[in-house]
Length: 131
Image (cartoon, rainbow, N blue to C red; front, top):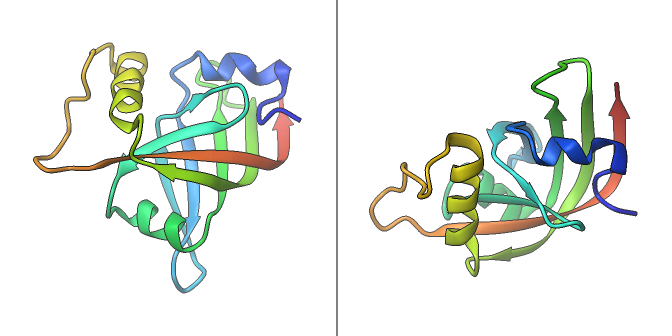
């Protein structure tokens, strides 16, 4: 089953933000808005090595994602899944692609000196859609 049902594929083309939930060491949730992409099989998220979500995912790959339709806040897609791959390969290209999608800029403008970008591939285990 694809990560995103066909009826909701349009959300991958819009400037829809995903709310990414990861688990803190004590089991409490950490939720952060993120840019995302979809490769037809996996949700792709990009972050910087060493950030809270990076540390959480490396320790526990279970995640939750909620994608809200920016044109209709009553329409959303919720995904429970796990990160099946963590890699630096392709992460720089992905953050630039996401920058173009979300800001119109060809290059990600908020890179810190020495920052290492990381790409996370998320496999859906359960989806729930509304609207």
